[in-house]
Length: 121
Image (cartoon, rainbow, N blue to C red; front, side, top):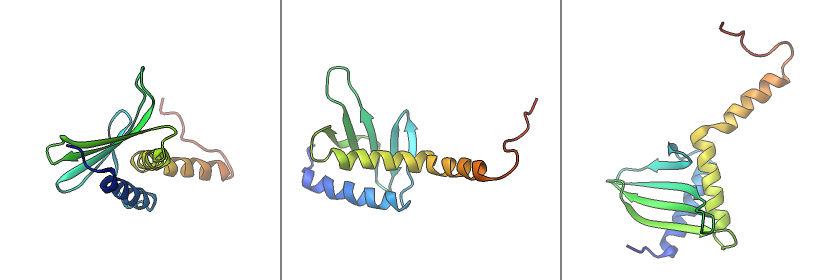
């Protein structure tokens, strides 16, 4: 089924805005695939780098059975590349919480005195 891009792009923009505000519960489902699960749908975002095709960021819209309803991929140089790239990077940040991890490390490094736990053995 082909859903018009004019219906998907606004969803991606809204999803990106909510993700930047930490209002989306992204989860890493496999490798570098990040999913948000809704009541009757899920959305996956991921980076694809096939050997014989252009690299793409992909937004996959899934039904309640996790079957793809439509898939939107954009390659570098296409107008929507920044949108899906940013959505992927923000979903990755939310799912892995790397920003919080780095904040904790920076706080430790800025403190005085020894840092780190004693070795457990």
